[in-house]
Length: 275
Ligand SMILES: [Fe+2]
Ligand SMILES: [Fe+2]
Image (cartoon, rainbow, N blue to C red; front, side, top):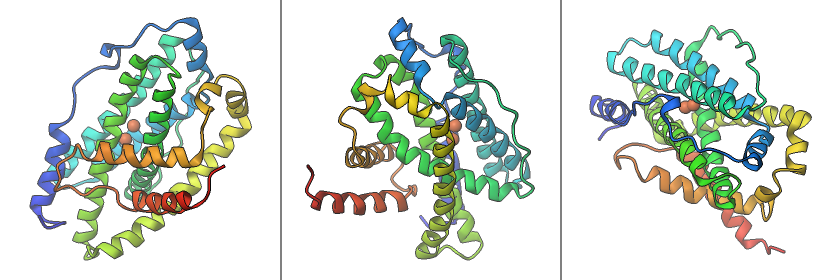
């Protein structure tokens, strides 16, 4: 299968559309939580940020879909926009159901260059998902919340994984159409956008740390943070990335740069004597 061909486009669009799941957030198997678990859920400092990010994602992806001429690409991106908006409704439902402390901030106006916004958003999702895979696994293994809660979150994780697989394929397809299909060239483009995504993530973490962040790490998160290390996080990001990515059609492209970098850094860390 040639990257940038019609066959490629059909494959990555059809795969996305065919794996779309129909549900409404209130139909999911939300568990009944006891007071201790609700306290823990409340102590997670990023619900407001996640809620805002998902609402913004729905707006960006939906607006970009409207500008796409190719009917199949448009249908697929529109469906992603629907899923992002549903993520926001899912988080909203959870906030209301468990009485979490998160308010709705007004959305920033959409940028004029909506395609660049979509691309920036896509690379941001790749970065967030790669790190999220590891954090999710560590949190689930630690028993920070009942496993039933993680089963609900896993629906969201699966959708985000589908989004990034679609995105890297769409991006490669787009680059090939513009005569930039040569793989090393695509890696340079990816590196540029990842650089911007890292800057944004650092900014978000900084803002978070100035707010409730310290409180979280000091109290409720002890169970989660016990035995936590960058090495353990990276190991979990890599194994979970491999496991989750192996569930897609083998002909599809998957994110390459972060796992490769991650493996390099991890190999370096293994040489370093751990105390
Ligand atoms: Fe999302
Ligand atoms: Fe997404």
